[in-house]
Length: 131
Image 1 (cartoon, rainbow, N blue to C red):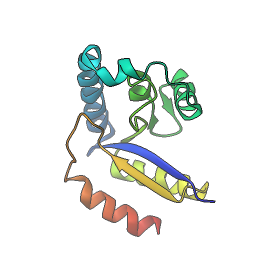
Image 2: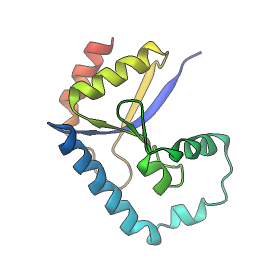
Image 3: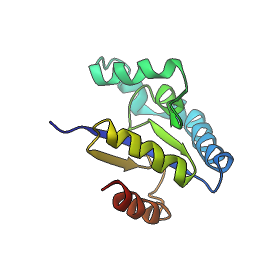
């Protein structure tokens, strides 16, 4: 059996920089929430995965940098869990998840953002260090 975890990454030179990025996306999504047909049309979805994701939103921050702020905003959809922090903090967290048995990480920027090319260097480093 294999385990996969889908995440968004907000990486900054400092934790404060990373949180500024995360909060900016949070504001952008919150402002657009009223116009989202997807969120309105999916409000009756009762899938187990969605319910589990929403159960994590009782606390916004878990472990060292696992953030569920977008999960609550997006109703448990759209790969909305995120890691927020410096490269080192996020690499440490990914390493702990790997030790717990996560085989694969799917990294996304979410539907509201284009792929960030600056993530390429970090992802290459993560592949090497987590191999």
